[in-house]
Image (cartoon, rainbow, N blue to C red; front, top):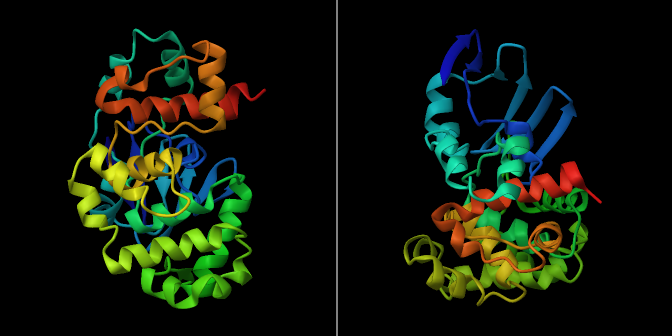
Length: 275
């Protein structure tokens, strides 16, 4: 990977297995907008980052190499060798085909609290509506700085209560959002403990929150805590399992990076195969 600073912008060339646009579109994050086929805007690491696809590579606007390396190299997981991970799935033809089509996807390392609430909101919901609810939540209870609203704190959500969340129109999810905030505040769920206690214990702890089952908990562990063995099964991944594995698939055989395979399969089915 090669960095070239051009005035206030940063160009990345020779970036293998990295496509931030596909990574945004694979269901792992929701604070992004497609401006055009060649430009996306992403809110992460406390700021807005505009990204452009050019003939030379990926151009990131209004950012220095120093800030990018400090904040976005970890966020985009750019220090991990995804090429070797893809090779480790070579015995599985379906994952190999999916990776050939979507091998630029990387697992974003998102804020654990934001990820938890985002995937509670995602339940029985579509991505455009999830994005709208999250945007409304941030505008309602977040703090504005340089045109970007921060993600609300557990305290601000607990103080607002389910009635205070009415303007974001999250429906039945409001009580789950508030329960998550209250359990994080009173220590029933400790996000630092979840980060350190190992996959099985972390999964069980997150499921103490009302409305958080296996699917939501696995999403949070994969995208918010870096538990790469987590393998969320939603309607799209279930469709892959039904269509290509006769409804019988054990993700544990994929080992420590099963969650990366899940992202390839999700994108393959949702964006390329569809129906």
